[in-house]
Length: 316
Image (cartoon, rainbow, N blue to C red; front, side, top):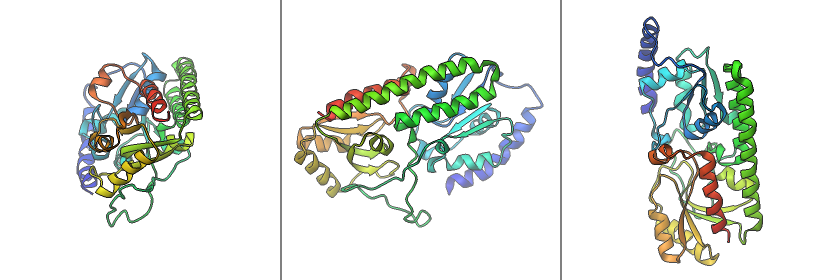
């Protein structure tokens, strides 16, 4: 509600400001296609497609939290002036619809990526700390928005992004299509590697002492999971019963690894590991990355490749 009120005041002001700014000198004149993305996965996909042509902007910065993000005036102007705007379309992106309804995006290719995949509902599995719902949300299950965690979904997203970029900058479409073909081949190899690791693993169960934003990943490869919280949970401290359940699971099933996700506290995983002797490893959901990782050139593919090694350890 707070975010909606913020947008009700800020968006009209931005519309007026952008009209007047358009009468003067244009800032940040960039040759090539201008792409704005809400979060890292589609930013990185677009980066792989465009190579050295055009410019990209990621609204939620490295290290930022998507679930609490509020757009700045400049972010809203960037969306309005983009040739291509990429967003997921889940609950965390509810603010986007308010902006798109309020500003002129007639010259912008808007791509809502959740429309290009088969979606799954967020779920609460055995032992998981249940999310407390407010009166507005009720008990209706939410669509899980972490669609990119499945490499096969990533392929669908890349193709949708590529189509929009090619339409926005048809002069360079051959270049973009070639890059897309190469990148899709890499994603398909990644998918095969995950399938091979799962097929040859001694077990098919993983444990997360953390939130679990990887339903699309586990469903894709037939993995069973237990975790402290659902993927978009706001809680950070699980109940004693949840910790006890996960600890017992690790002991009973002789699980060698307890996972945490990136940019998250390892406190719960460390507690479980301390009781069981399991190793704590990071599994990247690729929702975002740290400033250091971003500056060092980490990508969706590089982080998912790290996941290959971590998963192999966990399943053997």
